[in-house]
Image 1 (tube, helix red, strand yellow):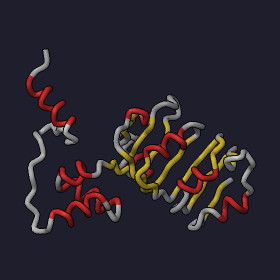
Image 2: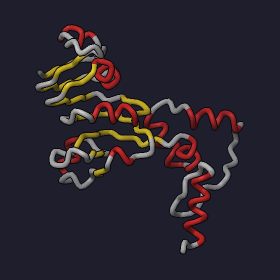
Image 3: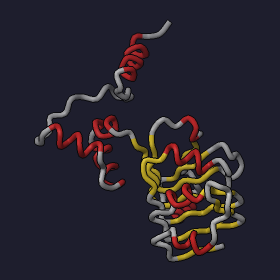
Image 4: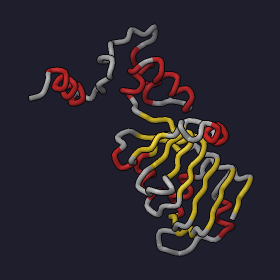
Length: 195
């Protein structure tokens, strides 16, 4: 037998609302027109701006549920697990990686906005991430021991400044290998590449 709070939570999710642990969200009375607030919620300009809006009011997350992820990588020991970290690498090491969160990306319901770094050595990881991405603004991209499609590579490297590629094959959809000059040409902000 379900308790009334569980059924209320289920009804809440069925209407498209998110159930919050401290109660449902309340109607907000903005000093602006609702259409302006709705536009702001649906079209965040930067990850930092979206994060501040979502932290200040549940409405923004409900309107556009995005998880901001500064650093993302697959677990070295369990390839089905994704590690998300809100901190820079140096700070994460200082914290002995206690700041990192382990999740199963297949079960993630919301879109992700990756802002700093992505590392992987799992063949199926990039196509899976592609289905979950809202925006990819990483500046550091590390890929190891995989084949990656050129379209996926271009999607991931739009803002990339540093790339580490080890034992990687970049291919077109027709399985032809992409030459190094085409790879470099496709990364407009590239400053450093380690092969």
